[in-house]
Image (cartoon, rainbow, N blue to C red; front, side, top):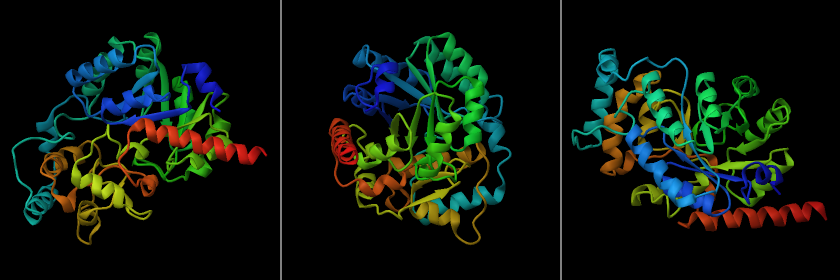
Length: 357
């Protein structure tokens, strides 16, 4: 199982483990998979520190980082320029939410409003990543040719997440080495096509490139199904959200472990792009009658970023949420990343053994 990923990257297991903290990625690589750190909301200085930790911890084990570089972003990291264009009705709506839920204003920005997602920010982040000649660069949204070319020049392989066959074709033209077929079941930025439908289509479009299945992958049965659909492995994120290494806050952990299969929603209220997350009063407020339409990225980031950061820091329970896929229903306990990956592999081997009998 996963021979192509093992031959290509040296990973014992065909599981890419994504986390927003380096410790999650480090644990995934140590468990025989490929750890991917999602650092797109980190400053260049934070990326430098995180990558240095990963390199020191992992040595020759395979790992990578994930950046989001969407098209159409502003040229410069200028928050005041974005704020000057925010509609008064939207600003007032956000302030009403603050008062309704008694969110403390600590005067600090959130992860989404510390800087503007812009061409300037993307180039500064990528410059740090490229200085380290990392094994893998995953691109969660967008596969700009300039970024792919820089990565290849530094000896890094490109992993592109795609939600449609057309996105796969664009990523291939840009030079992607590995494709992640990310179905609508997945957490975070997601498209409209289900994982079972999307994976075979991307496999067909891949031209022999390795393909990973993502979206709803949370058990060994999902891993076995992904292999049956033609994928070479899987990309998991939601399955690791409640892990010991992810260390969610008590309020968030309780929500993750209690979530049912219908407790995620797709909303534009976080980033301005479609985003699957735990349902909460946050998503309910933005979908209520009379609520304004979320703004486009990066304007929505700046509109809600400070408030959302304060919600999470002060654990304002009704509004606390997290990007999470439909696989969240399978989270029942807080466990180490290694235990989760061990179980996925053992279950998949049992299923594949039964299928082959």
